[in-house]
Amino acid sequence: MGMDNYWFNAIYSVTPTILVGGIFVIIVRSIIKADSHERKARAKIEAEERKKLAARLATENRDENPS
Image 1 (cartoon, rainbow, N blue to C red):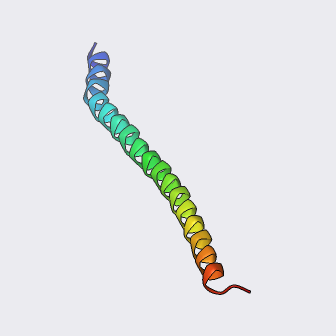
Image 2 (image 1 turned 180 degrees about the vertical axis):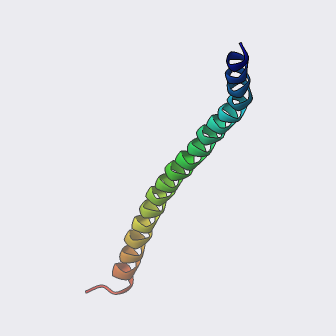
């Protein structure tokens, strides 16, 4: 009876820490994943903007310097 109570108390004492740790890991993982997706989206937008700028500059240069 003494050992059963000991193990119950041990598990009961550790469970909240494990649960809070698990929730923390899930939250941090989702933050990191969201940041990764945000960086990919931002890189895509910046690449599109660079492409538009290059096209506009090429058009302006062609208009200013006809061959």
